[in-house]
Image (tube, rainbow over all chains, first blue to last red; front, side, top):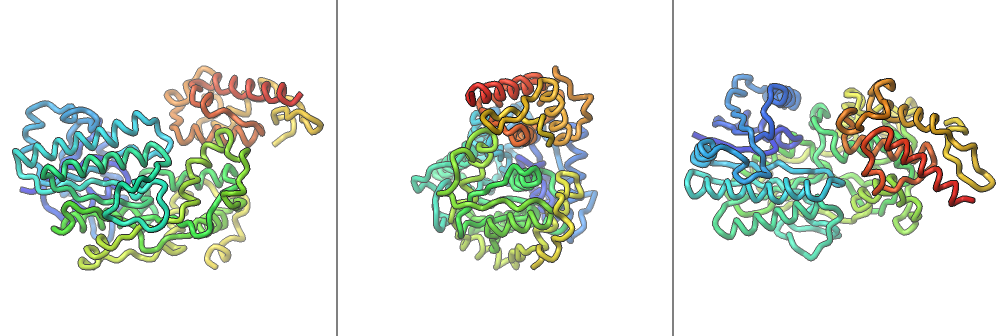
Length: 373
Length: 104
């Protein structure tokens, strides 16, 4: 019997991976969660239904989920030996998507989950491989392992002497180095590197207002009044449901074993267009764009400067992610990234308003035509 | 924003200094606006993270808005040491005070 073990299963991407597995596989799904409470389980089921795609979710399939209380940062996840032994014998597939994704998180906390957590998951997988029936590990990484690199980044590349912009990027890079080490001793690992994960492509729903959404709050508060951008800099967004589908299709293919795959949208959005469109649609004052060379030292001071410095590398980098290998697998399975057009973005923004995450600005009302122009 | 709510800027264009009570009122209002927590619940002894449930993103946003509204620059290292609403009010008062001294 198939048994898939998932870390980070309640996160934005994780819950969509669970949904894909419920819809397209028939085996057991084991979710590792730090605390298993009624509230957490209810929250997961609510999110699964909210993220539901074109294919209805069979509620009975939820019974295939087993919740296991444990912590990725602890050796053997802090599990009792009997439970560890049972899982080691049962699990044939591991999806590791647990991660601290905040760019401004405390370094020790980020490393604890992203690096030590990955090592613990790989140790678990190795035990499954040696004593059980493990077929594959899918390690969810990020395109951000490329750090400050510019130009085109290839899927096979990892260490090009890049410098990292924050502890998150470095921790995910270190985690991939660990993956390479475990691959060399015989553990089959598929690496997937998504770009910026956003809400559902159908409804805009999200269960996590991450760094993408935080920009909207900053715009609404007028905190982002000056934004340094480089012409040619783009944002690449992947809706969580489509990213999860792509990841599951890739991880189900033989050719993905021991390879890396960029989970990136074929359609990027120029940074300037993004800010202009969001401001116009939500009625916020359009930020003043400046060249990075013209940014004043005062703009980089204080808390606002700290925020700007977090976003700075992403609004000024000229880079693209080659996804030839991922695309080859996805196209052979009939998956094509839908165009990331205005309507796709509008769904995300509408959900932010609907959920109360952000409110319309005072300049709304004369924006519709401008946004769709 | 009312002129008297701004932190004193110093120099020829200095505005009237903000009083401690006004700082507290503004801080309470900003936290309430951002978190949707009713103002009466935002008392000085409350722990911003544990009692008011303000996560790190909201805390950063609050500080950024405070900077903008008071026309001040808060030292991020000092901001990370803030635990209670009283701590935050004190940080703003101290920042305003040093700004005034620096401007003389």
